[in-house]
Image: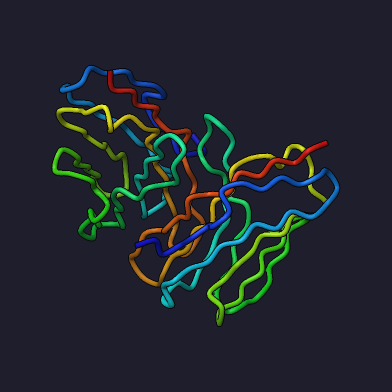
Length: 112
Length: 112
């Protein structure tokens, strides 16, 4: 029973264009959402987060949008760069002593 | 150090042997997580420690897996009688309350 779903295992985008990575969740108790980026042979690194009291958070080229009614969030990267090529994981947590729940990841390839 | 440290970085073991993986979290981080990533798969939650509370062991795949953490310090994940399906990258993360989790580089376990 996957509580966090990333339905696209891979995405290919041209350099300079927008990359949109999607994530859906089922647990309405989730109130904090994060995106992580992972290169091969490295641990995931934190990118950006959003709490459920907001619907948008922006940090440079990265913007996360949250649609609570649809239980959907997305990560926009614009403009995309070849160095953005990695696996992106969406994660969520509920209040209190609960673990972060991760999706299966989306492999982004940015083509020069 | 400033980040989450895991050791060893690589471990090759024979089927049936026990292995112990170590995680040194960021100082002051009360929460510590263990995840694993099998080839081509997402991040699979294993166990979660939060301060002095009882750990959330709901992700441990079998009773061959166990983990310990003393207070808010080092954690060890032990796998007894290793099987080939245990081969994976084992990732440790630590987190301050309500913040993002920081991951170590992982331990790549290969059971031959």
